[in-house]
Image (cartoon, rainbow, N blue to C red; front, top):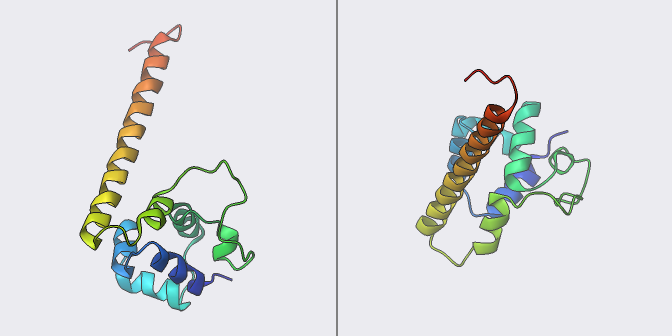
Length: 129
């Protein structure tokens, strides 16, 4: 069963508000609050997205594990990892700007990957572009 207390703990560790999380996942703050209080369980895809963002596992959020860290030591460095590292070192405004900058970097990486994929396709025999 989904564990809203664990969700709240992880959110607070990185210094985000319920409103910040709701905005990140494009849901109403009231809905997010209900996730944390256990009034409702998020859909499976939302649990996966939240776990990825917070740098944890779905098993942890579902109460199947007491270890919030992914057992995969090669997992990607997440925004939540960065926020944990800088918590207390920056003002709230600077932390939000850092989060926005990280999102910008993620978007740039996706665009670069798409461009790379497109260049690869152009080199393939039979490309009609």
